[in-house]
Image (cartoon, rainbow, N blue to C red):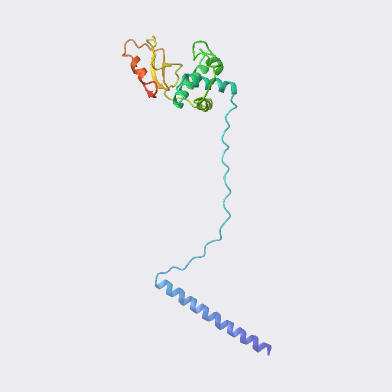
Length: 210
């Protein structure tokens, strides 16, 4: 009795499988005739590739707080206090002097030289507004920022002031100052700037010569 029951069950299963295969073949044939592509089994997703570690940005060398203070003071007293561009220009000259054998080798010594920067530049009060801007600009310069147009200049003066040097070659006016180089005689050329023109540019930034 058990045999026949199982036999009957096997017969029904075989019949069901046959019908399923037949319908599957028919279904596949119909899909091909009407141009429908059957879905293709996609491979199992693989584990995501490990992330590549990016190099750690290089840290800026420790800045001497005293040197930073001296640089910020030079920027504060020598440039228009609302001009970051002018402050960085002054900072560029300071750093050019530090790198020159003609001047002392530290920022504070350069800024503290007599008759070179504003009177009391290292001792006077530095009230706001402006000193926070000067401190931020000093950080930029000590991190390597330079005013491109100032280039290697070692000199500047108030834009409305006239200097007696015939070999002065003006480069840019920034933050109320005119930045220049010396060493090229200008006697056979027209002046690079007149006193009136320099005075009119005290509160602008303008490249004079490329």
